[in-house]
Image (cartoon, rainbow, N blue to C red; front, side, top):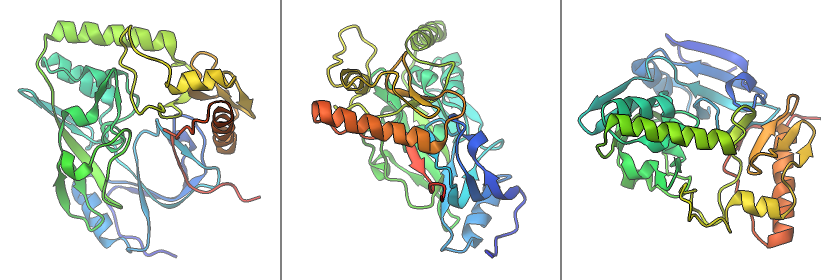
Length: 308
């Protein structure tokens, strides 16, 4: 039995994680910790036995938790970590703030972070995964990220510390990101909101936004996000090579590659994590056989398979 620290927030044993992920799959975490505030998080991490792994979890928009669950303490930030303030061209957002809310509040103040509007998820995930679209990335606008280390100390990380890459960063092991500071160009609020409305309309026309998905399943092979421009080249987009492999609409159990956008994997109702991950591997195999391209997962997969 692990001797866990006393907390002021909520600490739950054997907490199922399926209702915390957009795909609605996944087994239980050993523990789920929802800290009351930063000080509660600091003391918990400082006093938690060093051999106990921690897994920071956002809103689960880009995540498959395997059916056997997660042998770790999952840390999920909530109220108290979702504030958004704007000072001039600087936007400070808590890690639990939704990307869409940050984009809207920034636009209200005439700051252009519009690319965040259509990105599912929260600020913590956007920083960790260097989220981006329309040719813009989190790395372009981040000035610093504030974390609580595994030792319970508050530290600021620069973009250089994070070593931003396509859908990757170097976050210290066991650290929990609690806020991010962005700086965006100025713009007219009305024009910024109109731009976001157009982006949302285009997204809804081309992506299965009404289905249970986790956003893009695989990274684009060329390492570039879609620019949204009419002259964008699609030869090496993930959806294109999946189409070429004949895997649009492919199924396994309750999992399906969306007929609307073949790089979106959806839970049609009763998929297991094994169905979803297995279908993804079917797609990767078929794409490699037909094009010689090895697709890399963009969805994070964690935890253990269900023991037979």
